[in-house]
Image (cartoon, rainbow, N blue to C red; front, side, top):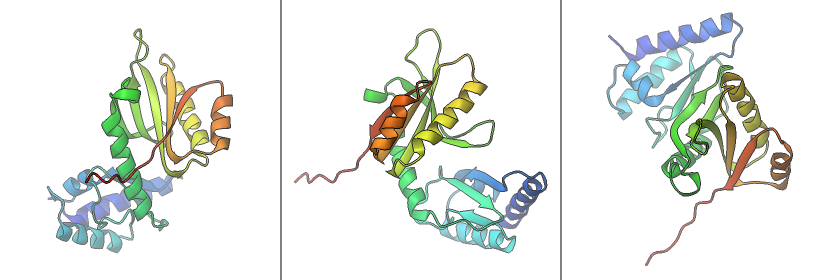
Length: 214
């Protein structure tokens, strides 16, 4: 029978195996998967509290904190043997932005992007925020990687290009494109994207506005 204690032991064993294999010692799961594997069908504060306690006893660190208010069942949770810097606010903002963008896929500017896969894991174990099928070419479906940033774009463009290079290795017969969506895109990022040549990358600035209706 699945319990918080048994789940914590399994995750700890997975982390130890990664350490022994000299691989990044992190295990990622969706919150809904965590709940199911811990014996909880639904999210409840008492369930998350007991699960957090069991993980702490197994010396497993969790990011974001499972008890974070409003944490989505689709949120990605990272388990590790080393404590990570708190990213509760950033994770919540990224989740909100991801949800907004996913709601726009298949419509308007993004009408050619369908079948989104969230937190898509590449062969090298890196994860792309969203990967979609791209319907711009009739002869074959392309693949588009979407990178999201809630703050300044920073090195997001370089990171996106690395994801696209890996996708090209995995899918040499498909056209690989990229989309960068950020709340603040600087000139250096735009210059970098203009000069990469190898890939087509669409760049969008995203903002959230408060508009009084009455």
